[in-house]
Length: 303
Image (cartoon, rainbow, N blue to C red; front, side, top):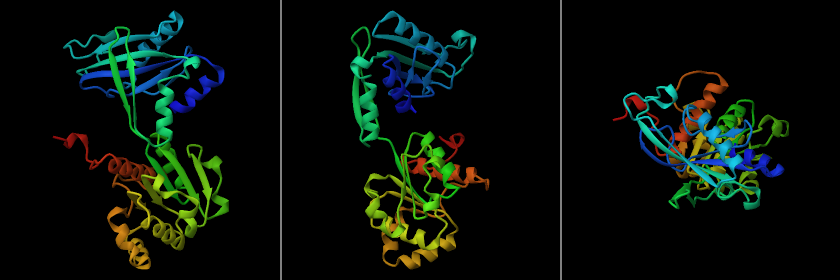
């Protein structure tokens, strides 16, 4: 993660280079505002292309660090019929302008530090960066999605792993002490021991964009759902078949009406597969689609 990579540099005081996409035309892998980090050695974090530009960017990042200059700009244009970029034949039909910006400990690694703090505090922000010609670009950063997983069983591990890989901030909660082992969930921000009926007392539910209920314990799942029904969490997923959902709804009484429009049960997209990892993929894919207001349809069917 970007925050971890920056933290390692901060501990030693070494300078870094941030590569920001400042303009795109046509088809490109990432869009303006996306950035990645490079150090003076072999370290890098993030991705601006499908992997075809990063080597060249790292070479220029090293040169920037050696020169002591503040910034350097690169333009990658694959719109020509021959697509001659280093003989790779990218064929992407797009143009990408990238501004490489030196980050120093004496300047608190700005502006990247501000972007990371905003993400941690769940707020959007904007920063301005300038190239050597004085041209100004505004980088917008959206707040980081937050996910609450209610139930820390073995099948919650890949859900946490996938969500963390997307950069989400993940919290797990479980009423069973034996399941509260942070070592099993290295991507989680918090792993909390709490009784299901006291969920809203232990966790600030308004902090979360989405919640997955997957304790495999009928009574506990009902109590988790009751707490979420009284919250404003926009997406609530419930693991298990439709018959189980209806049984839980019957036990929720009037609370079910407050939850029904937000509940996805059975949770997940129909992707196929029965392994814990396949189920986790379908769950996280659905949350991703809902948070971004997408239908989850194939790109090949897009018009």
